[in-house]
Length: 368
Ligand SMILES: Cc1cc2nc3c(=O)[nH]c(=O)nc-3n(C[C@H](O)[C@H](O)[C@H](O)COP(=O)(O)OP(=O)(O)OC[C@H]3O[C@@H](n4cnc5c(N)ncnc54)[C@H](O)[C@@H]3O)c2cc1C
Image (tube, rainbow, N blue to C red; front, side, top):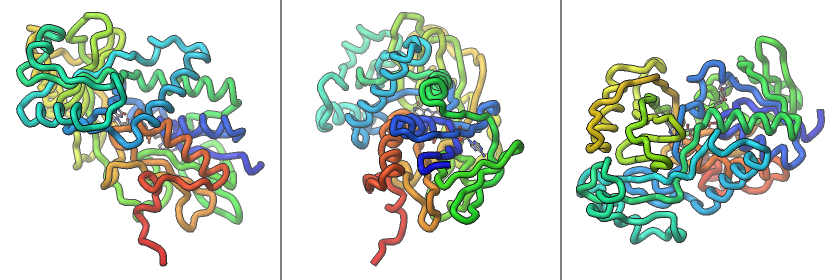
């Protein structure tokens, strides 16, 4: 065991992008996940959007250009590694038709008032929208996010894990960690098969993190999200994914409607109510396909961890030498996790300060 050995609990977007940045710095990583249970990881959502103009107000996200360049760098790395592009993502943009006057005002204001890089977003009036995308609700116009991308996230992770194993000898194990305990100078992570030890551990286990360590001081909230796979509502090539209130992500022959936001839940089963809400998201946005309610091919649910300010929690846990945390990506895993992975890897390597906006220190009481 050396100072460059690290155990990473969690191989979703947060754990995997941090592993890549650590491997690039010469660390030897051993990662654990439980992906054979598809619902244990929010990152196993069947399709997800990278949308820098997300949410109701379509505002530009935190460090949007830097986040975009780190996502692009990771994508480039996977393409150079030989992954065919269509296997995990499409640059098809995200079309956001407004569904009422209020959305129209928010979306339009975003195109006018935010400091967007050239060619990232544009406003489309109703007549232009009807001409270019006659299938969607066009009465209130739309914001078109040409920088938006659609990812098959399980495929992205599969490719990324392949690269980590082959290029960097990273060990990736489908084994649930049952306990994480400290003895002397090291952390011991115990699975059904063995106990693994290191003086550095990264806990990036999403909703599973809370079973392993007391994180009650870190303010967070768990939100269940359901998604369904349907027939593609539009079969034209390279049609943008669509996001109004909820999204219809499209990649290759697949279309996924997401998602619900459920603050009280007992389990991760898909529910009739959830499926109904999702179907309505499609019919409310795709008003002119003549197809009516979609047939559901499959359903899925996962848990997002959100924080009061909707920003991730990164850093070494106070009083827990060598135990680092990376959780709280909410609905923005694709946007934030590649850049946060770089930031956290630099912090683990040489103690470089993390930006306050993503540091877990922002939730601690101020020190004298
Ligand atoms: C329905 C839905 C739709 C979404 N849509 C989008 C979208 O369009 N765009 C977007 O950017 N984001 C989206 N998100 C959010 C995104 O999925 C999350 O932000 C992101 O996946 C969080 O990644 P993570 O690595 O922090 O956590 P997770 O993906 O939850 O990863 C946790 C990891 O820890 C492992 N694990 C947990 N417990 C243990 C244990 N005890 N032992 C070993 N391993 C363990 C899991 O197997 C997994 O590998 C969506 C989420 C949901 C639920």
